[in-house]
Image (tube, rainbow, N blue to C red; front, side, top):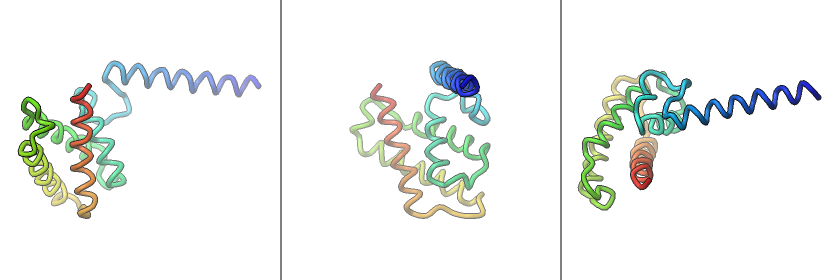
Amino acid sequence: IAAGRLSELDALRQANDLREQETNGQRSDLPGDLGNYRDAPAYYGLVNEVIENRMIKEESATFAIQVENIIEDCKITDWQDNLDVQNEMKNQLEDALYAVEDQMETGFTDAELDEIIEGVLDIAKKRDES
């Protein structure tokens, strides 16, 4: 019984550590400089989920930071309702994905490209709502 309680205590400590890292905007399990960016960690998670870790962590992290920069550079007031701005974001994201694809030994499927691009825009919209 005591061993079970100890493992529960360890799990609680780990959960509290992760919650504090999230609250502070810094997570120790993220590669590179991702912890210094607001949205890049979310983009990193999305990309890794879609491509199932076919990129090494540092490449995914660099790409996630690039994605955040693309989104931030394109934003204007009320961009969520402006299809021209959203299309510019999509075009730049697609170009960035093709550049990454050129560096990888395997490419992205059309479905993966669409899922990443749409997912990035969904994340950006939701984060700007809050």
